[in-house]
Image (cartoon, rainbow, N blue to C red; front, side, top):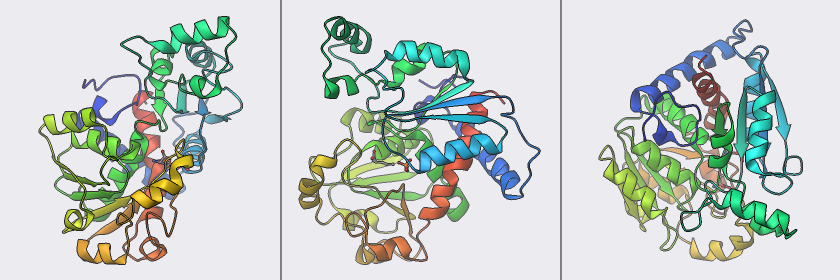
Length: 340
Ligand code: CP
Ligand code: NVA
Protein backbone atom coordinates (compact mmCIF):
# COMPACT_ATOMS: atom_id res chain seq x y z
CA UNK A 1 0.00 0.00 0.00
CA UNK A 2 2.67 2.47 -1.04
CA UNK A 3 1.21 5.91 -1.55
CA UNK A 4 3.84 8.60 -1.36
CA UNK A 5 1.34 11.47 -1.39
CA UNK A 6 -0.93 10.15 1.31
CA UNK A 7 -2.38 12.42 3.98
CA UNK A 8 -1.42 10.59 7.18
CA UNK A 9 1.64 9.07 8.88
CA UNK A 10 0.29 5.83 10.32
CA UNK A 11 2.73 3.11 9.19
CA UNK A 12 6.25 3.37 7.82
CA UNK A 13 5.32 1.00 4.98
CA UNK A 14 2.75 3.46 3.58
CA UNK A 15 5.75 5.32 2.12
CA UNK A 16 8.25 4.26 -0.50
CA UNK A 17 12.01 4.32 -0.05
CA UNK A 18 12.70 7.66 -1.83
CA UNK A 19 10.02 9.35 0.29
CA UNK A 20 11.38 7.96 3.57
CA UNK A 21 14.96 8.91 2.65
CA UNK A 22 13.76 12.34 1.63
CA UNK A 23 12.02 12.82 5.01
CA UNK A 24 15.22 11.72 6.80
CA UNK A 25 17.31 14.19 4.73
CA UNK A 26 14.84 16.94 5.60
CA UNK A 27 15.14 15.97 9.28
CA UNK A 28 18.92 16.50 9.09
CA UNK A 29 18.48 19.90 7.41
CA UNK A 30 15.90 21.18 9.88
CA UNK A 31 17.91 19.76 12.78
CA UNK A 32 20.93 21.79 11.62
CA UNK A 33 18.76 24.94 11.44
CA UNK A 34 17.43 24.39 14.95
CA UNK A 35 20.92 23.59 16.28
CA UNK A 36 22.24 26.84 14.77
CA UNK A 37 19.52 28.62 16.73
CA UNK A 38 18.09 29.83 13.46
CA UNK A 39 14.69 31.21 14.37
CA UNK A 40 13.57 32.54 11.01
CA UNK A 41 12.44 29.22 9.51
CA UNK A 42 8.82 29.17 10.68
CA UNK A 43 6.86 26.90 8.30
CA UNK A 44 4.20 26.18 10.97
CA UNK A 45 3.50 29.89 11.62
CA UNK A 46 -0.22 30.44 12.17
CA UNK A 47 -0.83 26.68 12.37
CA UNK A 48 -2.09 24.58 15.26
CA UNK A 49 -1.73 20.92 16.14
CA UNK A 50 -4.04 18.87 18.40
CA UNK A 51 -2.18 16.15 20.34
CA UNK A 52 -4.38 13.37 21.70
CA UNK A 53 -2.84 11.21 24.45
CA UNK A 54 -4.77 8.22 25.80
CA UNK A 55 -1.52 6.87 27.31
CA UNK A 56 1.34 8.48 29.26
CA UNK A 57 4.28 10.07 27.44
CA UNK A 58 7.38 12.13 28.01
CA UNK A 59 9.36 12.10 24.75
CA UNK A 60 6.43 12.10 22.34
CA UNK A 61 4.58 14.90 24.07
CA UNK A 62 7.58 17.16 24.65
CA UNK A 63 9.25 16.53 21.28
CA UNK A 64 6.08 17.17 19.25
CA UNK A 65 5.09 20.24 21.26
CA UNK A 66 8.60 21.73 21.25
CA UNK A 67 9.25 20.91 17.59
CA UNK A 68 5.98 22.42 16.43
CA UNK A 69 6.63 25.56 18.50
CA UNK A 70 10.24 25.97 17.30
CA UNK A 71 8.97 25.96 13.70
CA UNK A 72 6.39 28.66 14.46
CA UNK A 73 3.25 26.72 15.39
CA UNK A 74 1.11 26.13 18.45
CA UNK A 75 0.43 22.63 19.83
CA UNK A 76 -2.44 21.71 22.16
CA UNK A 77 -2.01 18.84 24.63
CA UNK A 78 -5.12 16.74 25.24
CA UNK A 79 -4.47 14.20 28.00
CA UNK A 80 -6.20 10.94 28.83
CA UNK A 81 -8.94 12.72 30.82
CA UNK A 82 -9.64 15.43 28.24
CA UNK A 83 -10.91 13.89 25.02
CA UNK A 84 -11.54 10.31 26.19
CA UNK A 85 -11.71 9.15 22.60
CA UNK A 86 -14.34 6.45 22.19
CA UNK A 87 -15.56 6.96 25.76
CA UNK A 88 -16.85 10.51 26.10
CA UNK A 89 -17.27 10.91 22.37
CA UNK A 90 -17.08 8.87 19.19
CA UNK A 91 -13.82 8.91 17.29
CA UNK A 92 -15.49 9.93 14.02
CA UNK A 93 -16.95 13.07 15.67
CA UNK A 94 -13.66 14.00 17.35
CA UNK A 95 -11.88 13.65 14.00
CA UNK A 96 -14.23 15.99 12.19
CA UNK A 97 -14.38 18.61 14.96
CA UNK A 98 -10.60 18.78 15.49
CA UNK A 99 -10.10 19.03 11.72
CA UNK A 100 -12.08 22.27 11.79
CA UNK A 101 -9.82 23.85 14.46
CA UNK A 102 -6.42 22.34 13.70
CA UNK A 103 -4.08 21.89 10.76
CA UNK A 104 -2.74 18.53 11.97
CA UNK A 105 -3.56 15.89 14.61
CA UNK A 106 -1.11 13.69 16.51
CA UNK A 107 -2.57 10.77 18.47
CA UNK A 108 -1.26 8.18 20.94
CA UNK A 109 -4.00 5.65 21.58
CA UNK A 110 -4.49 1.98 22.44
CA UNK A 111 -6.09 0.30 19.43
CA UNK A 112 -4.69 0.57 15.95
CA UNK A 113 -7.67 -0.89 14.17
CA UNK A 114 -10.79 -2.31 15.74
CA UNK A 115 -12.18 -5.14 13.64
CA UNK A 116 -14.49 -7.90 14.62
CA UNK A 117 -15.30 -10.47 11.98
CA UNK A 118 -14.67 -7.86 9.30
CA UNK A 119 -17.08 -5.43 10.95
CA UNK A 120 -15.87 -1.98 11.83
CA UNK A 121 -17.05 -2.12 15.44
CA UNK A 122 -15.73 1.27 16.44
CA UNK A 123 -18.87 2.88 15.05
CA UNK A 124 -21.63 0.32 15.14
CA UNK A 125 -20.93 -1.20 18.55
CA UNK A 126 -20.14 2.09 20.22
CA UNK A 127 -23.43 3.59 19.03
CA UNK A 128 -25.25 0.50 20.27
CA UNK A 129 -23.60 0.69 23.68
CA UNK A 130 -24.16 4.40 24.03
CA UNK A 131 -27.84 3.98 23.20
CA UNK A 132 -28.11 1.18 25.75
CA UNK A 133 -26.11 3.12 28.32
CA UNK A 134 -23.63 0.29 28.80
CA UNK A 135 -20.32 1.86 29.66
CA UNK A 136 -17.63 -0.77 30.03
CA UNK A 137 -14.36 1.06 30.48
CA UNK A 138 -11.97 -1.64 29.22
CA UNK A 139 -14.15 -2.34 26.25
CA UNK A 140 -14.50 1.29 25.29
CA UNK A 141 -10.75 1.77 25.53
CA UNK A 142 -10.52 -0.67 22.65
CA UNK A 143 -12.56 1.68 20.54
CA UNK A 144 -9.87 4.34 20.35
CA UNK A 145 -8.91 3.38 16.85
CA UNK A 146 -6.29 5.48 15.09
CA UNK A 147 -7.29 4.28 11.62
CA UNK A 148 -10.82 5.52 12.25
CA UNK A 149 -9.49 8.85 13.46
CA UNK A 150 -7.47 9.22 10.26
CA UNK A 151 -10.36 8.09 8.08
CA UNK A 152 -12.69 10.81 9.35
CA UNK A 153 -10.11 13.60 9.86
CA UNK A 154 -9.70 15.94 6.92
CA UNK A 155 -6.25 17.04 8.16
CA UNK A 156 -3.14 14.82 8.46
CA UNK A 157 -3.08 12.37 11.39
CA UNK A 158 0.26 11.24 12.84
CA UNK A 159 0.55 8.03 14.82
CA UNK A 160 2.33 8.77 18.11
CA UNK A 161 2.17 5.06 19.15
CA UNK A 162 -0.56 2.46 19.24
CA UNK A 163 -0.54 -1.06 20.67
CA UNK A 164 0.47 -2.15 17.16
CA UNK A 165 3.25 0.23 16.08
CA UNK A 166 5.32 3.38 16.71
CA UNK A 167 6.41 4.82 13.33
CA UNK A 168 7.75 8.16 14.67
CA UNK A 169 10.13 6.26 16.96
CA UNK A 170 11.53 4.21 14.11
CA UNK A 171 12.05 7.32 11.94
CA UNK A 172 14.09 8.82 14.81
CA UNK A 173 15.98 5.53 15.17
CA UNK A 174 16.76 5.45 11.44
CA UNK A 175 18.07 9.03 11.63
CA UNK A 176 20.23 8.12 14.64
CA UNK A 177 21.70 5.07 12.88
CA UNK A 178 22.47 7.13 9.77
CA UNK A 179 24.25 9.71 11.96
CA UNK A 180 26.28 7.17 13.98
CA UNK A 181 26.89 4.23 11.64
CA UNK A 182 26.88 6.41 8.51
CA UNK A 183 24.06 4.56 6.72
CA UNK A 184 21.02 2.42 7.49
CA UNK A 185 21.12 0.25 4.38
CA UNK A 186 23.01 -2.96 5.00
CA UNK A 187 23.35 -2.51 8.77
CA UNK A 188 22.54 -5.29 11.23
CA UNK A 189 19.95 -4.27 13.82
CA UNK A 190 19.25 -6.78 16.59
CA UNK A 191 16.24 -6.21 18.82
CA UNK A 192 16.15 -8.16 22.10
CA UNK A 193 12.92 -8.55 24.07
CA UNK A 194 9.17 -8.47 23.52
CA UNK A 195 7.84 -8.68 19.94
CA UNK A 196 5.85 -5.48 20.42
CA UNK A 197 4.85 -2.22 18.68
CA UNK A 198 8.49 -1.17 18.27
CA UNK A 199 9.29 -4.46 16.51
CA UNK A 200 6.33 -4.05 14.16
CA UNK A 201 7.64 -0.66 13.08
CA UNK A 202 11.14 -2.11 12.56
CA UNK A 203 9.58 -4.83 10.41
CA UNK A 204 7.60 -2.31 8.38
CA UNK A 205 10.75 -0.22 7.85
CA UNK A 206 12.60 -3.37 6.76
CA UNK A 207 9.91 -3.98 4.16
CA UNK A 208 10.93 -0.70 2.46
CA UNK A 209 14.64 -0.08 3.20
CA UNK A 210 17.15 -2.98 2.97
CA UNK A 211 18.97 -3.92 6.16
CA UNK A 212 19.33 -7.01 8.36
CA UNK A 213 16.77 -7.11 11.15
CA UNK A 214 16.70 -9.78 13.86
CA UNK A 215 14.18 -9.96 16.68
CA UNK A 216 15.25 -12.25 19.54
CA UNK A 217 12.32 -12.84 21.88
CA UNK A 218 11.09 -15.56 24.27
CA UNK A 219 8.80 -18.22 22.81
CA UNK A 220 5.23 -16.94 22.75
CA UNK A 221 6.32 -13.27 22.59
CA UNK A 222 7.07 -13.14 18.87
CA UNK A 223 5.82 -10.19 16.80
CA UNK A 224 2.54 -10.38 14.88
CA UNK A 225 2.81 -13.21 12.35
CA UNK A 226 1.08 -11.34 9.55
CA UNK A 227 3.47 -8.40 9.89
CA UNK A 228 6.49 -10.73 9.85
CA UNK A 229 5.16 -12.42 6.70
CA UNK A 230 4.47 -9.07 5.06
CA UNK A 231 7.99 -7.83 5.82
CA UNK A 232 9.65 -11.07 4.68
CA UNK A 233 7.40 -11.21 1.63
CA UNK A 234 8.49 -7.74 0.54
CA UNK A 235 11.87 -9.32 -0.22
CA UNK A 236 13.73 -6.12 0.66
CA UNK A 237 15.58 -7.03 3.87
CA UNK A 238 16.91 -10.10 5.62
CA UNK A 239 14.49 -10.64 8.52
CA UNK A 240 14.90 -13.24 11.25
CA UNK A 241 12.85 -14.06 14.34
CA UNK A 242 14.72 -16.17 16.89
CA UNK A 243 14.68 -17.22 20.55
CA UNK A 244 18.48 -17.07 20.91
CA UNK A 245 19.78 -13.58 21.82
CA UNK A 246 23.45 -14.63 22.10
CA UNK A 247 23.57 -16.02 18.58
CA UNK A 248 21.52 -13.09 17.23
CA UNK A 249 23.78 -10.26 18.44
CA UNK A 250 27.05 -11.44 16.84
CA UNK A 251 28.41 -8.69 14.58
CA UNK A 252 25.48 -6.33 15.25
CA UNK A 253 25.75 -2.65 14.36
CA UNK A 254 22.92 -1.91 16.79
CA UNK A 255 21.57 -3.83 19.77
CA UNK A 256 18.11 -2.48 20.61
CA UNK A 257 15.94 -3.02 23.66
CA UNK A 258 12.52 -1.94 24.96
CA UNK A 259 10.47 -2.60 28.08
CA UNK A 260 9.19 -6.15 28.58
CA UNK A 261 5.72 -4.92 29.58
CA UNK A 262 4.35 -2.14 27.40
CA UNK A 263 1.73 0.44 28.37
CA UNK A 264 -1.50 -1.45 28.91
CA UNK A 265 0.40 -4.62 30.01
CA UNK A 266 1.80 -3.41 33.31
CA UNK A 267 -0.24 -5.96 35.30
CA UNK A 268 1.76 -8.68 33.48
CA UNK A 269 5.13 -7.14 34.44
CA UNK A 270 6.02 -9.57 37.25
CA UNK A 271 5.17 -12.66 35.22
CA UNK A 272 7.04 -11.32 32.19
CA UNK A 273 10.18 -10.80 34.30
CA UNK A 274 10.24 -14.56 34.83
CA UNK A 275 9.59 -15.48 31.20
CA UNK A 276 12.13 -12.96 29.85
CA UNK A 277 15.09 -14.23 31.92
CA UNK A 278 18.05 -14.44 29.55
CA UNK A 279 16.79 -11.56 27.39
CA UNK A 280 18.37 -8.75 29.41
CA UNK A 281 20.89 -6.69 27.43
CA UNK A 282 23.92 -6.77 29.72
CA UNK A 283 27.66 -6.22 29.38
CA UNK A 284 28.21 -9.86 28.42
CA UNK A 285 25.71 -9.69 25.56
CA UNK A 286 27.23 -6.41 24.31
CA UNK A 287 30.66 -8.10 24.39
CA UNK A 288 29.35 -10.93 22.22
CA UNK A 289 27.84 -8.32 19.87
CA UNK A 290 31.33 -6.88 19.38
CA UNK A 291 33.25 -3.61 19.42
CA UNK A 292 31.25 -1.77 16.78
CA UNK A 293 27.80 -2.37 18.34
CA UNK A 294 25.85 0.66 19.53
CA UNK A 295 23.14 0.28 22.17
CA UNK A 296 19.73 1.84 21.48
CA UNK A 297 16.47 1.93 23.47
CA UNK A 298 13.32 3.90 22.69
CA UNK A 299 13.01 4.78 26.43
CA UNK A 300 11.63 4.81 29.06
CA UNK A 301 14.05 2.09 30.21
CA UNK A 302 13.80 -0.05 33.30
CA UNK A 303 17.46 -0.39 34.30
CA UNK A 304 18.17 -3.77 35.87
CA UNK A 305 15.24 -5.33 33.99
CA UNK A 306 15.53 -5.39 30.17
CA UNK A 307 18.94 -3.64 30.24
CA UNK A 308 21.64 -3.09 32.84
CA UNK A 309 22.56 0.36 34.12
CA UNK A 310 26.09 -0.20 32.77
CA UNK A 311 24.90 -0.75 29.20
CA UNK A 312 22.72 2.38 29.24
CA UNK A 313 25.63 4.46 30.59
CA UNK A 314 28.37 2.93 28.38
CA UNK A 315 30.16 5.12 25.78
CA UNK A 316 28.56 3.19 22.89
CA UNK A 317 25.03 3.82 24.21
CA UNK A 318 23.29 6.36 21.96
CA UNK A 319 19.94 6.48 23.75
CA UNK A 320 20.04 10.24 24.35
CA UNK A 321 20.92 11.34 20.79
CA UNK A 322 18.21 8.84 19.78
CA UNK A 323 15.66 10.52 22.09
CA UNK A 324 16.65 13.96 20.78
CA UNK A 325 16.09 12.78 17.22
CA UNK A 326 12.43 12.14 17.97
CA UNK A 327 11.91 15.87 17.60
CA UNK A 328 13.93 16.27 14.40
CA UNK A 329 12.45 13.23 12.66
CA UNK A 330 8.90 14.26 13.59
CA UNK A 331 9.42 17.84 12.40
CA UNK A 332 10.32 16.41 8.98
CA UNK A 333 7.36 13.99 9.05
CA UNK A 334 4.98 16.89 9.83
CA UNK A 335 6.49 19.05 7.07
CA UNK A 336 6.01 16.15 4.66
CA UNK A 337 2.37 15.35 5.46
CA UNK A 338 1.47 19.05 5.57
CA UNK A 339 3.05 19.54 2.15
CA UNK A 340 5.44 22.23 3.44
N1 CP B 1 9.83 6.59 23.28
C1 CP B 1 8.66 7.16 23.60
O1 CP B 1 7.70 7.15 22.82
O2 CP B 1 8.63 7.77 24.82
P1 CP B 1 7.35 8.36 25.57
O3 CP B 1 6.46 7.20 25.88
O4 CP B 1 7.87 9.04 26.79
O5 CP B 1 6.65 9.31 24.64
N1 NVA C 1 6.64 -0.73 23.80
C1 NVA C 1 6.53 0.46 24.63
C2 NVA C 1 7.12 1.64 23.92
C3 NVA C 1 7.15 2.90 24.73
C4 NVA C 1 7.67 4.07 23.97
C5 NVA C 1 5.09 0.69 25.00
O1 NVA C 1 4.21 0.56 24.12
O2 NVA C 1 4.82 1.00 26.16
